[in-house]
Length: 297
Ligand SMILES: N[C@@H](CCC[C@H](N)C(=O)O)C(=O)O
Image (cartoon, rainbow, N blue to C red):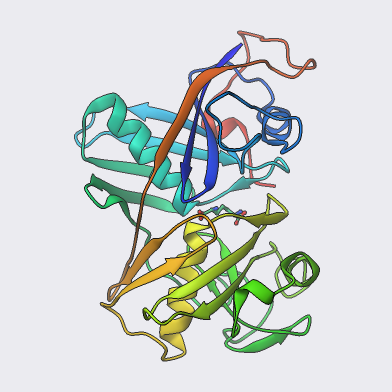
């Protein structure tokens, strides 16, 4: 059995596993436990399954403490970054160490997180529209360009995102529209697909179809930052403003600075328990289970 905990950030839910646990096949483990019908459940679980598994390697000899975060998604892919996952990881470290600042090592870079009265705030790095860095198969940034019939602005906020501004997110057929955009040839590594609509409070409603989950999720932190960055690029908001972004699972706040983006919101711990390895995964104590042992898909 493997010790697991469950956290969520505005409904984007993650199973957290200490990287010291023996999990020989992380992809199979993620597919098994994240399944929304048959995956991990518990009396205190808000939902069966999860949007991914965070394998966390705590390095508490540092001050502030550091943690190496590896997100394995339900389809077995490893995402370079996850805004809500990183916020959950920061809270997990804070609960173990008492620290209110945590450094999170991700494949997209090291990110600083602060745990406080307003929830967990993470420095997400500077969003980029550079076609080589999103990446997109184009010489120019994609700003209000049509992809598979949808007008999108494309930005990397740790992972690639396409953002479509619409009048009302509630009427969008996300499952009908997003998969073709997510898989469009112009995105060599795929893209997450976001729909955003202006709110009277100056913020945005958000719905996101996530790569790796291959479904709409209740929240996406890198998506909230992508919406705000695209809005700034299009002159809808300004740097320095605190922009409320409302995914179906709650409320996030994004603030763009000259060279960074702050993402803030609540994080909840649901439960701790044990999970069985899939039948094909006998524990082999000789196997390497370092975070690096699993590569990008
Ligand atoms: N939900 C995450 C994003 C996770 C990564 C994404 N699915 C991808 O593969 O790019 C977030 O909160 O940012």
